[in-house]
Length: 82
Image 1 (cartoon, rainbow, N blue to C red):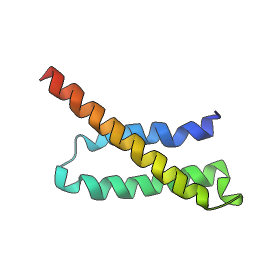
Image 2: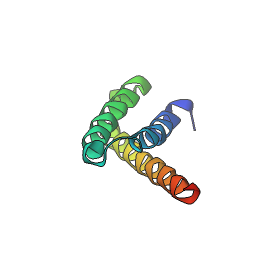
Image 3: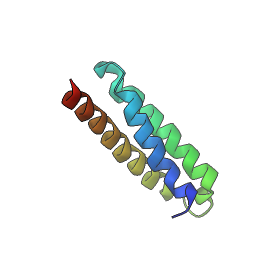
Image 4: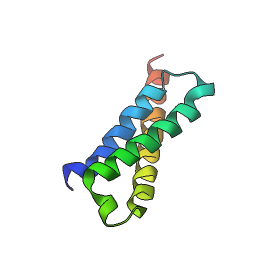
């Protein structure tokens, strides 16, 4: 796995951790907007768009899943400590 393939995963995890500190009402809008932007940047910087823009859909899914994992993990850690 090249470093370029790890960018959407790490970015999604960080996004999820950051979303944990936002208001629940804004979480979906901010999360979706940020996931789309991160995915677009990851697809563009990796050069995958030269092969197919379909890679953007894959990157969106990876970022969203990683963000959900990051958010749930952070919430469970807070719950277990609190």
